Structure formats: structure tokens, C-alpha cells
Amino acid sequence: MAIKIVDIRAELAPLSKLTCRGADTSEAEANAAFARLADFRDGAVFAGSFEGDSGWEKHAKGDEIVQILDGATTLTILTAQGEEVLELTAGNLVVVPRDHWHRFNAPDGVTVMTATPQPTEHTFADDPR
Image 1 (cartoon, helix red, strand yellow):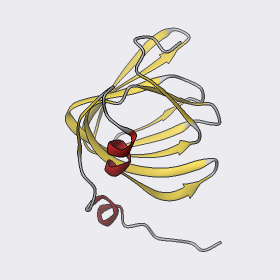
Image 2 (image 1 turned 45 degrees about the vertical axis):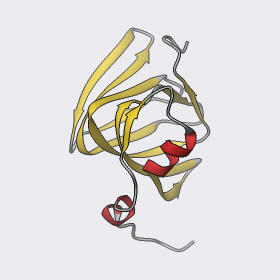
Image 3 (image 1 turned 180 degrees about the vertical axis):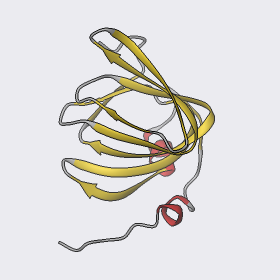
Image 4 (image 1 turned 135 degrees about the horizontal axis):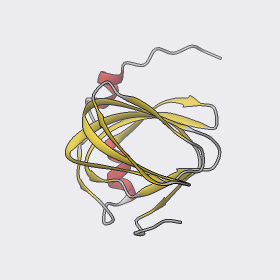
């Protein structure tokens, strides 16, 4: 296995910022805004920038590590106790527990880096449960 240094800024530079992310965003538009930086366990490390609502997602194979590189987002995680709402800004890191529905809302824009297990389940339902 070759050890690789990843220049995150260089990987992000050619990408488009995804604006007005929401239920009508195509998979191609989302893919154009995110870079796959490295393979990691059952998934990969990704980085990208967007404005808007990511919709709900969850990862059945493991926890997801989320680091905010720039901007801010509200991260809502559905737990057994209800919705946990986290306000995240540049420099913050959080671990989303395995198999928990969560979503990002970044009306003013955010750049994130995640270590995301695959596959990822997505929905824009009001309540994904």
C-alpha cells in the first residue's frame, strides 16, 4: 500500500460550489462539488462545498467523521431521545454514530471533509424513520 499525501486545497480548487442544494439537486451536480480524497475503511474521505440542505442520510456500516473546514452548518442527528441539533463552524469536528439519520443545513455555505462509510442511504422525506 502506497502512503499518499493529499493537498485538500488543491483537490477543492477545481470543484464547483453546490448552490441551492436540495431535493432537486441531481447526483451529477452533487458529485461535481465533492472530491474523493482517499479510500478509508468501508468508504472514503470526501471534501466539498455547498449551500442548502443535504437531505437525510445514514451509514449502516459505521460512524461518519465530519470536520468543518470553512463556513458553518447546522447538523441535525435523529437519536433515540429525539433530534439533536448541532451548530458547527470552521474547525469543529463531530462523529455521527453508525445508522443514525442526519442532515446538514448550510444556508450561507460550508466546506466539509468527511470520512464516510459506504453505502450511504439518502432521502428528502420529512421524517426518514
